Image (cartoon, rainbow, N blue to C red; front, side, top):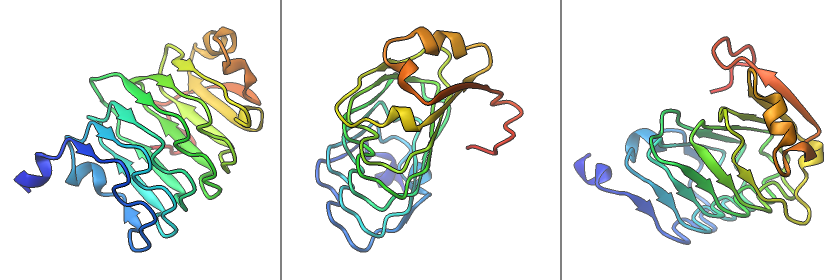
Length: 178
């Protein structure tokens, strides 16, 4: 277990095209100190269906493109500023809902292009920097933000591109998002 705690990064191409990995819902508890996940780490993984990412995470680069992932959970309570690099969920057609943590500060382009995402819940009270690339399908995604933050998101660069922006009470959590 101590060796798992010592792991702080998942290297580029770590499980690329792996046909065995399916359930990583315990990833955050097994690797609590992982702060970066390299590009293509889980790209084209046809069996990967879920993963829980640790709160220590501050950088994730194009990790899940073209994977079968249907559930990604970012653990709450991160102290560092999280950056989501480009193409992370590009062509992830099974992924319908994404819940992003409060410590997100930057979201790069092509992250949702070709994905099945229809709902994004974001816990950040200050809109992160959001890049928009060709094919990012924000206009097909309903965005849920903390109570009192809808106007901030609507006026922030690129956030108004979402289909809807709705305030959501994360304390009451009526949709049971993690």
